[in-house]
Length: 113
Image 1 (tube, rainbow, N blue to C red):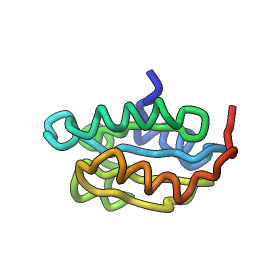
Image 2: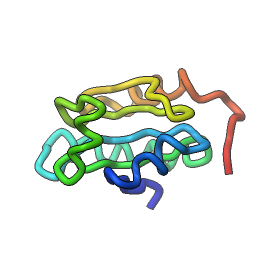
Image 3: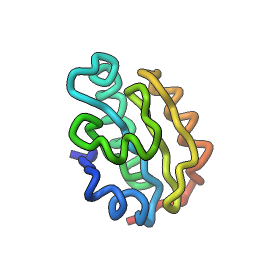
Image 4: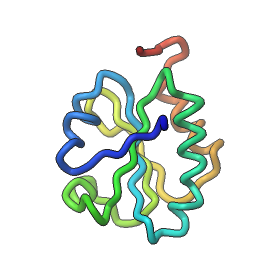
């Protein structure tokens, strides 16, 4: 599975200290729109596997990070580069919207191992 789970306790290490860009999907199991965007997040993880780390954070189980980043509605997708949040997409959006947002920050040929 190319999408990993992140928690309040692992967020700093997995996202903030990451040496590659990170997409974090803030979601909850009861959220209908979250379930709708889930397959899109999986596709993004597959297509960008050599340029991006994709993480999911369950906001019910990890309220500290969700609160710290002001998550008021889910799904919310945030993009982090070098530990800094650079963009946010709120709601169940089409794949094209996420790709356009990601492509603003990911340089062609800027791949990681």
